Length: 203
Length: 201
Length: 191
Image 1 (tube, rainbow over the protein chains, first blue to last red):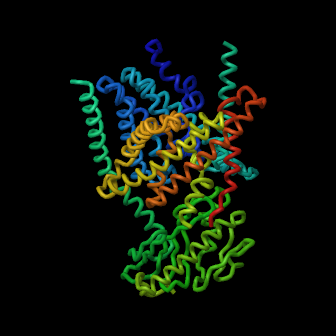
Image 2: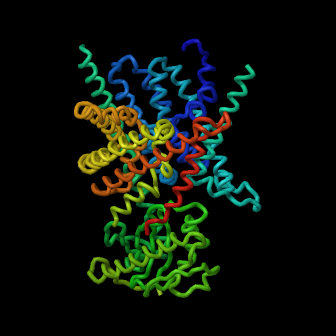
Image 3: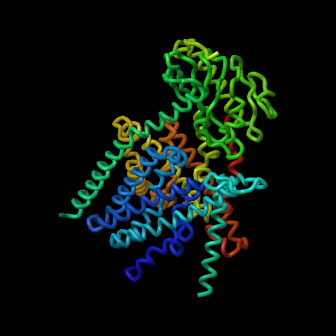
C-alpha cells in the first residue's frame, strides 16, 4: 500500500479503519474499563504504548524473523511491552492499576495489536508502521473517551470525578454497570454505520 | 543456515532478550509495587486504630489477618482485623479496628469491593454507612437495623445500619464482621494473638 | 461449600461474557447458529479447564518459587498458545468426529481473551489448584450458556425487521446488554 500518503496513513485510524467503530477489534477492554473517563483514558494510553513500541520493534526486525515463527515472536514482543506497562502502572499509579485490575495484562490478547503487526508492521517500513500505530492508537483512545464520557456523565452525573449535571439529574446507574456498556456501544456502532452509509450514498 | 536452525535461533534470541529485559524491569519495580501494597494496608490500619505508631502482624490465615497497632512506647492499643467475605457481587475485603479486649469497634474501612455502584457500593461511603460503624459495642453479636435509621444516635450500641436497597451487602459485611470477631476471640484464647496492653479508654 | 460458591459465581454471577466482558469476539462472531455456538462453548470449556491446571502449575511451581513473577504474562500466553496447538493435533489424531465438532474452533481460541483472562484472574485471586479448576469449569460453562442463549435469540432475529444501521454487531450488542441485565439478577445468590 505505498500509494497512501503519510497523512492518509495516519488519518485512516481515526475513522475509515477505526479499530473499535469500524473494525470491531479490542472489544473486551472497550466494554470493561469505560465506566469512568479516567479508566478509559489510562487504558487507552497503556494500549497505545504497547501498540506503538511493538509496531516499531516488529517493523525493524521483520526481515530477521522466519515466516513460520512470526506469530510466536510477535506475541513475545507484545507480551514484553504489556508486562512493562503493567509493572509501571502498579509501581507509580497504584490506584489506577488497582481499578483496571486484570485488564492491563489482557492487553496482550487485544486483537488490535497482533492484528496491526500481522497486517501492517510486518510488511511496511519503520516510519510508516510508527505513523500507522500512532493513528490507530489515537483512534482507539478517542473511541474509549467517547464511550467512557457518555457512560460516566449519564451513569454518575460526573466527568473525571467532577459534578457536571445539576442536582435535578438522577444518575442512570445502569450506564456504569455491564448492561450499559453493551447497549451504549451497540448504539454507537449503529450511529457509526449510519454515518458511513450516508456519506457513501452521497459520493 | 538452514531454516529450522534459523527458526530456533530467532525464537531463542527473542525469548532471551525479552526475558533479560523483563528481569530488569521486574527488578526496578518490584520493591515499589510491594511498598505500594504495604502502604495501603498500613494506612488503613492507622485509620481504624487511632494513635497507631507501629504495626505488628500477629496472625494470618485464609481471608483473615490480624494486626496489632502500637503507640510510641510500643504498647498495644488496638487490633486491626483484615477480613474478607462474599458480598452481593464478589468478595468484600475490609479492615476493622477494635480495642485489645475486642469489646469495642473503633471504625471500619473498606479495602476492596465490586458492589453495585450507587447501591451496594455505598459500603465505602465514609459519610453514611461507615459512620454508623464508629464506636460500636462488639462484646455481643452485632445486629442489623432494618429498615435503615437516619442518624447514628437512633441505633442501639451494637446495632449496624442497613444500606437502603442493598440489604444483602449490609448483611454480608455484618456476618463477616461477626464471624471474624468470633475467630479472633478464639485465637486470643489459643494464645496466637496477643491482647496485652491498655485499652484506649 | 467454598468450591460450590466459586463455581456458581464464575458461571452465573460473574459470568465471563456479561460481567468481565471476556471472550466478546467469539461471542459475537460464532453466535449465529445454536449448533456451532454449542461446539464453540464446549471447545472453550475444555481449553479453559486445561489452562486452569497448567497456569496454576506454572505459577506455583515455577514463577513464584523462583521469583519470576514478571514473566507471568509472557509465559501464560505462550503456554496457552502451544496448549491449544497440542490439543488440536491430539484431537485430530484420536477422534476425527470430535475434531469435526470442535476442532475447527480451536485455532480461534488461541487469542481469545477469555482463556488468558481465566489464567490471570485465577492467579490474582490466589486460588488453590482445586479452586482454579472449578473456576475454569464454571467460567467455561458460563461462556457456553451465554453463547448458546445468544445464538438462540439471533436465530429468531433473522426473521425480525431490524433497522438497517443496527443490523449485525449493533443489535447483537444491545441484546447482549439486555441479557447482562438479566444475569445481574443472579447477584447475591451466594451468602
